[in-house]
Image (tube, rainbow, N blue to C red; front, top):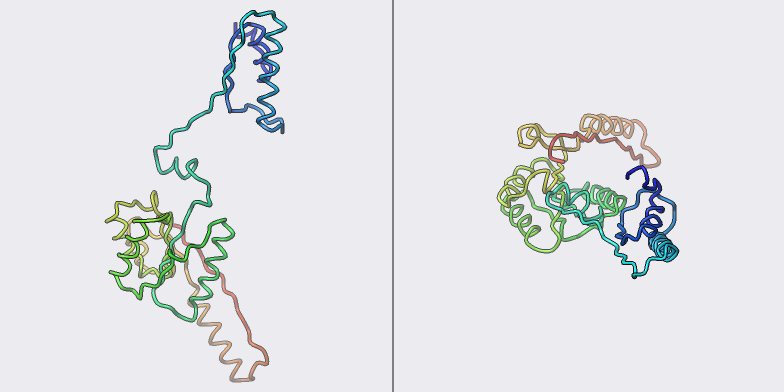
Length: 239
């Protein structure tokens, strides 16, 4: 009867031993006692065997430990259970090198490090805005090694070629590969799925540059000034 069964998980083993039942123990725990799992299992199996012996059962008790198996059949399963976050890889696609490139790349690498993702130099390249170069490089990413789970485009203008290539490879956005742009150009709301992108504060950049120039003409500054402007993440559908 269910009313005769013990409520506490550890007591099930003792009860099973007293009743002369074989024990099948799971790797799932219903409570956290801060005891290492291997020690907890050993203690509970020992309690079962002791209860069996005290009950005077003649035959040898049988004990097995089962392991829970969760089938991974979808991309969501793979993201949640298939591997830890360190298995993710992010591809970086640049347009043309500029004085800003080292700073943007430095921030990109810092973000990867913070997320526990290793920077892979093979997943970073400058395309010079050439459609064939973009196509061939992305195909190569998915043909060998560990493919990226996300692609960062340093300019929204690069994104249409990325979308076309991923569609050719039967890669769904964002289910298979997330795509992030930079620039917040109007094309972001035309693409399907709509592009998640980083808005650059262009007006503020121009305003601050003009003010610095005027100040420099009026009185040459003795030390350089560095102004940091906050960019905005525009969250849509692609990431």
